[in-house]
Image 1 (cartoon, rainbow, N blue to C red):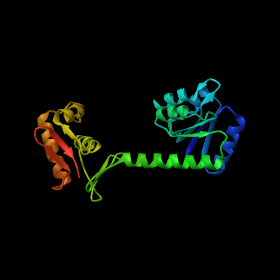
Image 2 (image 1 turned 90 degrees about the vertical axis):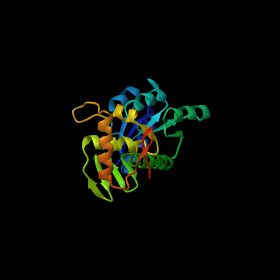
Image 3 (image 1 turned 90 degrees about the horizontal axis):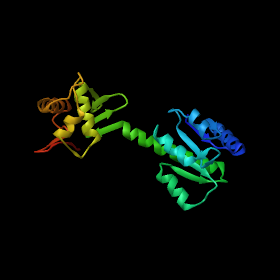
Length: 221
């Protein structure tokens, strides 16, 4: 069940939205201004309905503030129906824009669409794949053909770096700069070569790790 934070100073509008969303099985929290919104915001919030014109400041300022904490989706609510205002909100990281007055059924459709996009994006980012290799980042687990592969911390970090930059060539210097051993010490060229060799052996002959002669390595299907 998604949790939605409403930041709206008009009590009538806020009450109507909150009641409607509660009936549609959302958790809902309401703050009447920016100060209260900051107090109520936690990283468990899944979406924010944000009024642009609030007693203690602009919704744009709140959007900028929140985006430094978490990339939570934001739908702006406003009476201002100007293209420049819409563009500014979207450029700042807003996900949608709805002009008052609006039908609650339309708002619900917008919320559903934004949450669906966010869920899909988060799922795609948490699972990395190359051929028959799959990494589930949230669990730090690696699978080949659905069978789990045991990797050392160094091997896992190396694989993760290659997969997160799939189809891009990473130089040895680049890899060395971002990798370290279990003692927290940076690895050297020889250690990197050994790690690549062992990782290829564990991933199998059809490993996605390609050597780019004279440069470094690339992960590709």
